[in-house]
Amino acid sequence: MSGKGRRRCGLGAEILVLLVQADDIMQLYHHPFSLDSQKVRLALEEKGIDYTSYHVNPLTGKNMDAFFFRKNPSGKIPVLQNGSHIIYDTIEIIQRRILTYSKMHRYIERIAETVSSGGNSTTLSSDVIEWTHKLQEWDSKHFTLFHIPAKHRLYVSKFLRHVIIARMAESPNLASDYHRKLKEAYETDDKMKNVEVLIQSKDHLVKLLDELEVKLGETSYLGGVEFNLANVVVIPVLARLELLKLEDEYINIRPNLADYWVVVKQRPSYKKVIGRYFDGWRKRKTLLKTWCFIRMRSLLRKY
Ligand SMILES: N[C@@H](CCC(=O)N[C@@H](CS)C(=O)NCC(=O)O)C(=O)O
Image (cartoon, rainbow, N blue to C red):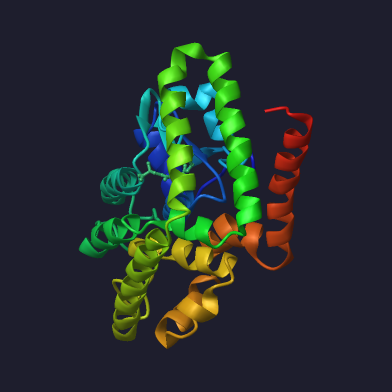
């Protein structure tokens, strides 16, 4: 689903919505560029959970808009809103939603045997919890930034600083949050000068991938012989490596991981959440759209 819009879901989730949600459908603020957004969307797609989708592009500074900042003063995505309840911790979003869904699914199964969820597990396995935490600890942000040409990285970072200052002027009541964000932007620029940050992030990644390689030698998917939700936190990491053209260095040298990557890319959830933006020629189109926006706004000084 692109932009704003509501997705129809399978029979299981639809009955779930009718039974459970007399209140609002969840709203997800996310973007295809964001690794954590991809994790959450893959989980929602795999479980057939209905939600309203809003794109918030962090590269064009949309996450700095006051309406979004009021929801999440860290300006980070994804953010899940259910009525007045706002969750912005990725682990909590995945685990909380899965738990709620699974619990309700068991309830529905008791009263209507015909309902099927499209998933294979109704309990949250220890693999999901373990790997969600493990991969969440990996510093994907600095790793990604280190692999973007400095010229482009600095251009975007300067643009974003202007955006923060412009939004701060419009909403002085949020000044302290915007100040924190500005400080964070300068700190990120400083970290890019420290190669030790890259080395640490690389070492951490290699350790995780080595561990995955062993696990995938035991079962076809992480955590079992069938696809389960532990895998939704792995897929975006592999997609990020491919996007950065690092698949030979990190994926293809590990045979089990390479086979796994070919298989999971066939899943409809992958195609919907990642493939439609980044596979083949689409990658160029997706990146170019954002790049042109930033260039134009910078040239016109319209932040
Ligand atoms: N709240 C999240 C953090 C999510 C996060 O770091 N999001 C990134 C994209 S994957 C983001 O929004 N970056 C934009 C920014 O920091 O301005 C968590 O659970 O750790």
